[in-house]
Length: 250
Ligand SMILES: NC(=O)c1ccc[n+]([C@@H]2O[C@H](COP(=O)([O-])OP(=O)(O)OC[C@H]3O[C@@H](n4cnc5c(N)ncnc54)[C@H](OP(=O)(O)O)[C@@H]3O)[C@@H](O)[C@H]2O)c1
Image (cartoon, rainbow, N blue to C red; front, side, top):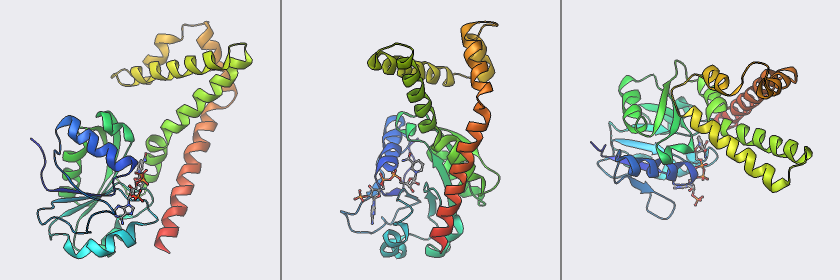
């Protein structure tokens, strides 16, 4: 059954991906969408206010509508780098739940980390996101930064690896176009495997036979420090998220 009383503030890349996913899955059929073009007034039946603004503008955007948020409404923030305590200062008395989804929610195939210290708020977030994402509960708010790095940012990391493979393929004699199409195709194949319930070890094992060509490539990745590279990317993204939190709180 569709969830009612949902208002969305900010309808950019992530906000529109969320509404597409809701429409596709019938989760929320008619969310009220507050953009810059409409008066900043929350509908009186708002049960959940989903904030999908850029961290740099959220305070100024929320200020004019804060007084119109009905008491009892839950705030669902999908913003990276904005702490629940800071939102609670602007919207006092409202439970806050933080959700960190990927834009694949548009296809009902996202992943979303969820944190709140308020159990009903967490349950409401599950109601809104479980139909469009694999929902992962976090035990502490601070882990949102790690989840953002490992899920939110990581699609770009996989694209970057596909770009590196494209360059390597061209170096090995493929035309740039052929190399790019082959690397993208490989990324799609990997995504299809990831969409199943098979473990990552099993997925690798299905492709890499002992002593074969894939095994040789995997060994080269290990030798070149793939684990260190993954750790460096995740730690850099976490450091940046923490510095954004400091900027927001200043
Ligand atoms: N994109 C992702 O993959 C992703 C993933 C996880 C989390 N997030 C988080 O999601 C949030 C939004 O990111 P995004 O990529 O969707 O950014 P975006 O595309 O720039 O969307 C932000 C939207 O907010 C609107 N906006 C700005 N001021 C407003 C106001 N006063 N009233 C109503 N709407 C207003 C913007 O409208 P204008 O275009 O008119 O300025 C824009 O449509 C960020 O906090 C980000 O950390 C994004």
